[in-house]
Length: 354
Ligand code: PHE
Image 1 (cartoon, protein in one colour):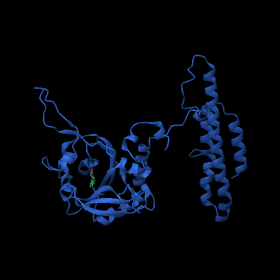
Image 2 (cartoon, rainbow, N blue to C red):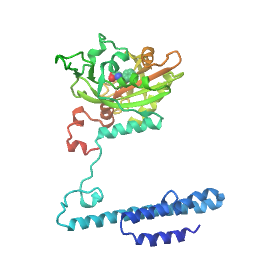
Image 3 (cartoon, helix red, strand yellow):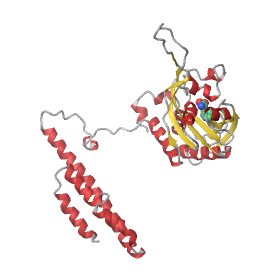
Image 4 (cartoon, rainbow, N blue to C red):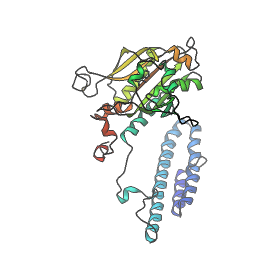
């Protein structure tokens, strides 16, 4: 197990590299799944503790060093390729190529939109807790968005979530049929949809676009929400509280606290409004939180037995909790953004701050 010899071999091999293919061969030879250094690293497990202490760091350092050399070499190859292309007049050298290290020709590096970034962050936080990320539909049926959630056609809650309806045209007489489809107003629409197709235990997080007739500094007709749904045996409000408390700490900062206030949503019982300590004044009271120290952040509650039943789940055996909130709202709190429209205007002076 001579690491020095292996290093020499690697240096000799990499000096002969001509193109990306021979470089890939070298990578496989030394660092691949059955590569020479990989085998050595695997065999460390069988050594005595003393030997492991000596060999372990050496072998790991060599692996890092080799990976670095291979990465350097990749760039050099890409560079040579680019120079060749640049010399041939037929090529449009202004076409950027992904193989070329952009930083060296001073293209400004772009980055994800702050909203996308925040959505990824939310997904990561929940995934770490064992949640599955599930996609939602933008166009939803009236049934899943409302009726299945204990909100029948004449329920007043529908007024607060007016949205865009899509009419189905009857081809025969060109007359519209009932408004069966709509642009979903809440990610809660995925609750029954998912329950119908999956057995408990269910532990999902659903980010998605929502649409409502709201339009002011903190509301936009199109926005994003995420929904959490957990269904299992013996779930209590304690599970809900601990889950949300952990998530809010991770998203808004370790010092964040949450509190529950009773509220009403037809699809949960009991229903809750969840407040977080104001991130601007850390709970001391300021203009943003109207001097209360708290900011309303999520709707939540224990899944209503009717909703479980609608999803084909026996409420005598299972219980569940659900929560949902606007992603823009969270991002605006986190980054102190005063107007929701700033998130959609694509003004680089705004976006470059993230
Ligand atoms: N869907 C609700 C809303 O848009 C929020 C909510 C989700 C409330 C889950 C309770 C449970 O306001």
